[in-house]
Length: 83
Image (cartoon, rainbow, N blue to C red; front, side):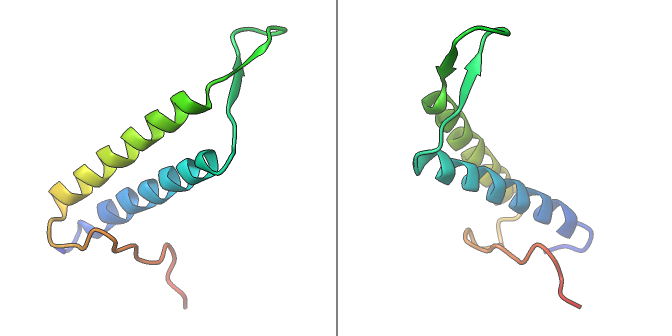
């Protein structure tokens, strides 16, 4: 990886981890419900959110593969350095 691009790689990897964790939460039974306005009934939008988040994860993966073709697909470096 070229010097100076490590921050971008970490940013993409962190975003990917976050989106994938939310997808796992939803797939494991988590729910997202929204109300159109105050006092209105809540509508379950879990399936819609899961589909959107999966698309977002794929878009991040594609961007990461394009920008960093030499990095392995499953390479998730630690988020923090231990001193």
